Image (cartoon, rainbow, N blue to C red; front, side, top):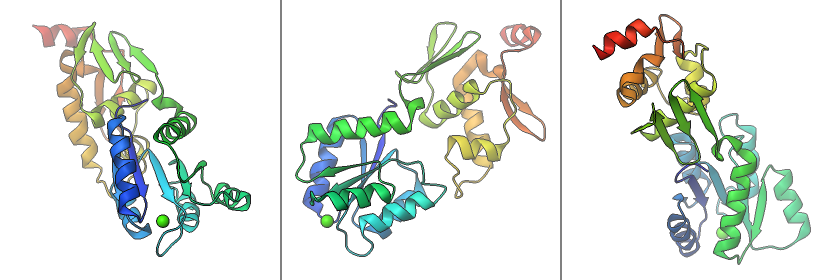
Length: 239
Ligand code: CA
């Protein structure tokens, strides 16, 4: 699993939200709290979480309506949703799953149960976040431990650069436009400009050091990660 998955908690009761947030933080997650659908939508617009914990009974739009809405939206449709419900009724659970929730947790629940269910939906929905390593030439990336190395030496790579590198390595030798990278790496983020990609490519190259020549700019088309680095370039870079 990737480091510190982002969990959006949509819950109108501060005491419950706080309890969930504290437990998540202690167990390697990054919680964000929204008290209703409107606040949750603002958080979703800003950044896509890895999981949504969605209370059923909320002021304004219900958890059920929100689940339906987010499932219908191409941006959020693949974010796992765990419904929190105080009801144990079978028809409600079915309605929640019909609305697109991945699973539900009946209140009151234990921290262990909540964590187990979150980890389970993350594994099901995002298999690429589970231990997965790629190597291209002497460049290695381990998604499980979040480590990158070049010729066996560890490199320091920021979180966005890590995602970008992971994607480029998994689809090496192919040219990706900025729009495609935004879609695949940032998750179809309509609020991010294409030049943001250039900023992160620059940071990625800085982080890669002498392996930076593997990230090629293809004029007028985008970027590509290649193992076919001209050895003359490497020698020139070392000289
Ligand atoms: Ca509630």
